[in-house]
Image (cartoon, rainbow, N blue to C red; front, side, top):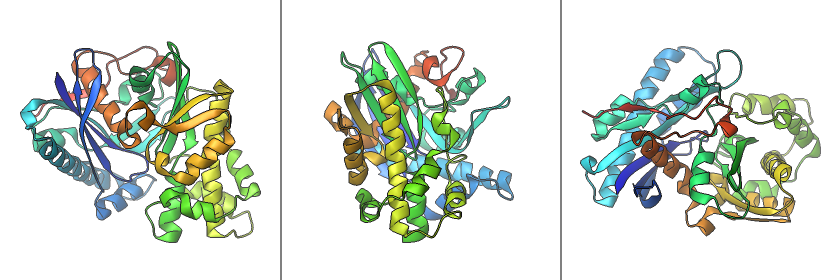
Length: 365
């Protein structure tokens, strides 16, 4: 048996998830312990600023790179204390890092995640596997999403299934026998979270209560759905670079002022419609399992079920894994794959030229 830790801080920046997994010789994980911490407010503010072009970016990124690595290390220390394990019992930490740029198109495509793996290795005393996405980019892929490979390994069954991870950005995995399809469908929580912060002084819309109190504005929704990304064929991935508050404001400014709750309701409808349309491209019916923060948004889950009446819409809890910990476990799995010399990407999903061992190793010693 081998222990690995997975660390995840997603596009929504709603916290750092740390997951401890035990792997058998075939690489099948068992969730042992988990822990989540908030990103300290000053650092969170710096990270939000880094997600769009600004002044003095290199200095600010360099400082944030180390600051979030210290936060990652804090999460690891608490996780180990919970599990009553020592650093020397852990084979590796798989650290996704914090994405601050994702530009997967063009001749010099790139993706950038910060969270200094050398600092993390030194602070925890555990080898770190990090920088998972750029090998796939180098091979002509999108570098994302990476979780469909893990979904295949953990959730594949004789019946067709879809797994939808709703973080800042939502991504869909379609499992049909040995065939796996996957891509980012568009905004998950990122626009709703930003609207909640800016207009309601809340980190997010808990249970979709604000959205549920408003009405969907058809004109705004039509404008938002006109973004060419939604019609773009897979492989594809996206992020805050396309779907951000400036993009939203450009549409709001051309319409009459809307009640704040109506904007939230429309943003939720955007997430629901883009996920539902993507699912219906692959099947008329089936099982759709949600994970990520959006799985806890009651209004979102309810509207998805209403929009997809021929689908069973539920969460990965029914498959034995709490939806909050799926992505963290995926990066523990990718760390296990790396240390065992096994590929971690699916070219059919990302568009890479071939399979590859993802990530680089940063020894603690």
